[in-house]
Length: 458
Image 1: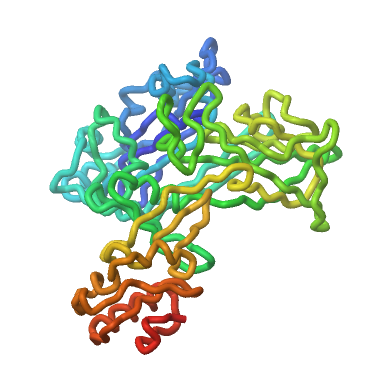
Image 2: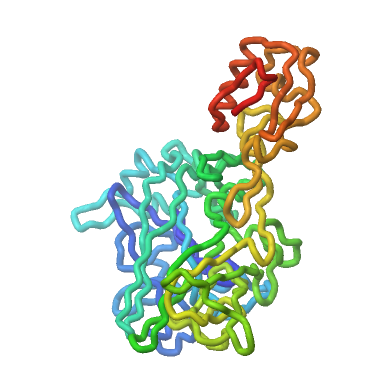
């Protein structure tokens, strides 16, 4: 698997680490500010590990140093040199972690990871040389589990969290040479046929398919949200503060510096990042909206400009250097809070629209046939069914019979629509065509297909 430690402003990799695990194996590491342990280390960051699992780069032979005998690898600024953002090492101090399974190993490669009497792997060099598929590599089965925690030793705080996982990410081996600089999160699906996201739209499952050159849209569709609902508490009497962490893990694919931003984002990457305007509504614990506005009142439109953002619930508009809980400097711009406790709703599609590019028809569906033709806003599906998108599935050509190919096109008139959506007007009633259309109607969630009603569905 590949572990990418990504800095929080632009999402660039500060360290890409390949880890090779045997059955039931676990890798652990600690990310720390070097200044906390190494004199004169400046603002650098490192990950240290005493774990015996095979890695590339190797902690055993390629470490940049050691702390109390534990080797560490230092984060690098190379990936973002030349972009409009900050260029120093401080940029690597915060961000997020991505883990992508690259391959399953068999045969001699799997044997190289077998543990000896002292617990050490048999031959780390054999697996570290893997730079592409071989006869002993197979597509990853996705059996990965991860978790992490943010620890502040001086404060005695420990904030654990679990990884957000994507199922069915790929059916192929993703191994490549480090020199190829492949971003594994963009390798979802298949480079020939594209990728699909299975999401809920209006409470119903929908398959949103995307072409090969937009496979990252499937990843975005699976992770996006229209709004976030969460709780907060701020009480000076008990020393309570709240931070929300909001991450855009695919943002870097849409906001490249010097190029036009790609939907759902509206700004390309600049000196302040790429900002997303939002709206926040606060409630007290009795369900009443907490009034905002007026002279000196905090703003209620947090602007999320980084890949990783922290909304700190404060007494005044954002003017502090760090958040109250995590000590984060990746603060949402122009935001403060007046309420002390209760739920809040962060609207990601309110102050400005953030709609993902439309998906295409699901695999195996003829052009023009209603399926998962959709628009996904910062995370819901729009126009994903026939009843909501009559124009998307009712062309002037007989698409329904192109799908089943059982009835000659000359015997089919163009689609007709009514308030319920698409209704193909069939001049003929070939049983195979009717059966195919009925099955597609059931797949789209309709309860009934009546060929005597010109193809109307309910």
